Amino acid sequence: WKLSSKKDRLYVRMDESAGMTLPDIILDTTPFKETKNDRYALLMEEMITEGALSLLMMCVNNGIECTFSYKDGGVLKKTLVSSPRDVEELAFDICMTSFEPSDIVLEAEEFSKSTDVSVVYTLDVSEKLAASAEDFVLKGNSVKIIIPEQLSGSTKAVFSDMWTIGED
Image 1 (cartoon, one colour):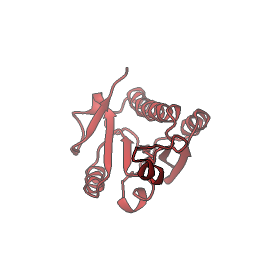
Image 2 (cartoon, one colour):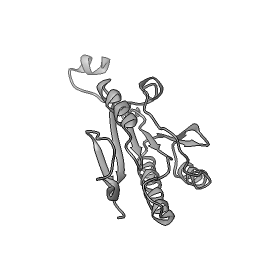
Image 3 (spheres, helix red, strand yellow):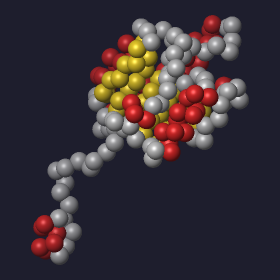
Image 4 (cartoon, helix red, strand yellow):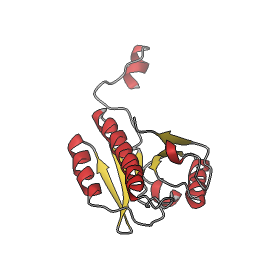
């Protein structure tokens, strides 16, 4: 800004990257409970996992680092992802994770320290998740909840910014 004011002309430094918030991509590993058909449940779990990893890969391919969060054995794991190799390693780790009952809840105290943008891939929008997401939004953050389109009519709760993901 000093040079711009001296020369009375706008100068922009090209060697500095623009400040950017790291998106937090969250995979809710709560199992699909609405069916006795294990194959259908596995397909739904695969759909949200592939969707989350695809978004993650798109971000890192465009130079955007992300935080990826998921529960494994009841423990929340958060990983900073900055390269396609990181995504590949994470995909392998997730393949070793089984979908277990858990409550992924966006708590402003936990997530707002690192991001103001969260994308949650889930098989069920519980009332607890929807309420936490709304609270997160009221604090000035952005939340997108993504569910398989086949399940869009069966969610227990409604969230204002819910997207669906299809097989394509």
